[in-house]
Length: 97
Image 1 (cartoon, one colour):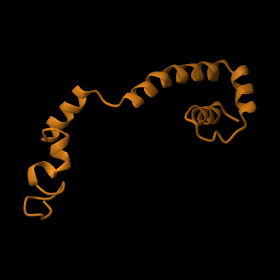
Image 2: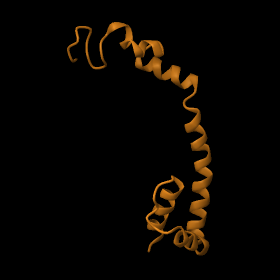
Image 3: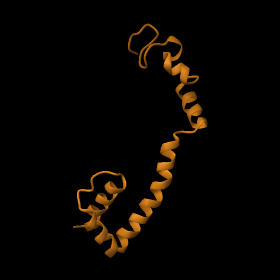
Image 4: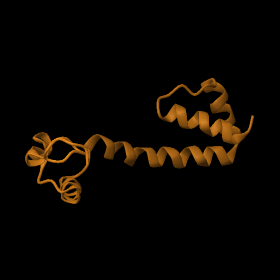
């Protein structure tokens, strides 16, 4: 089996998905293959900050910038359809733009 296939399985295992290969086989390969061991170490280091950001959600500043770019004024504007403009993709008369 090639390293690329094993790395796909390792990636799945890191994500909590079925790896498709026994853990013992993956661990044995990583123990013997320096390139895959280095790949796994890098993937684990990257995973930590990514998961931390995912649990916190976007910052208030990022959200404000996004809403400004979308032309809304905040969460209330999204909930009421943006000052009565109807659903996204529709004009004020309800017809599709």
